[in-house]
Length: 114
Length: 116
Image 1 (cartoon, each protein chain N blue to C red):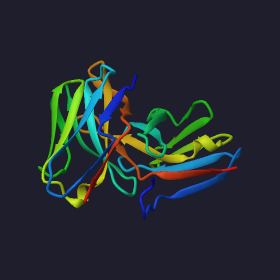
Image 2: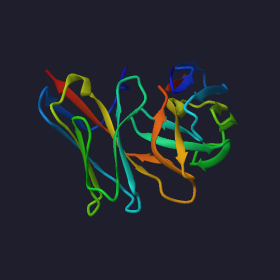
Image 3: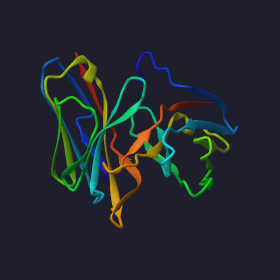
Image 4: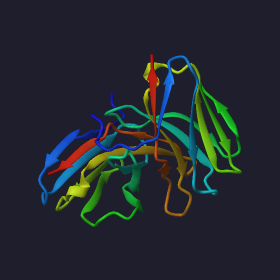
């Protein structure tokens, strides 16, 4: 179950509405970004990614927008379904000589109500 | 077949004990990671290994020691467990293409460690 004292930002939407989840990233040198979905009791799962040479990328029901000027990412989910309820993380690649990894944002909890 | 598998899924132990979490990936990836997720769901990288070699070692107490016997396995051993070690630990892997790591990390289901 969920831990006590969870203070994630929460977005509550009605089934069928569109959802927009926002993320601010920290490193202007990052050139690769991913959105992950984490359901309760599971590991993060890949949703969609975008490279810094793009400002928009679309998948099935999801769109990622990248604004490098203000270091902002958003994830748009069309026609949100109950199965979309989860915690969503944006991640940026860690740039440097120490190797490749992803740096995760704080997460947003999406709750879809019928 | 599970791509990245971790054992155990749950681990409850007393302070001061030593415990290990095992991870295996069958994706043929060259790089493996350990991440820690705290009670606020914040995911933070701890270590990464590339072909059994330690690449990233974030500010983690020396009580945490990763071991990679081969590139398909990355185990995490924790000595002298403390209350603050309670968290969910995730193993992940990624592939190298053209000499560069690229793309997504594939995560395991997590191992929930509770220290009493």
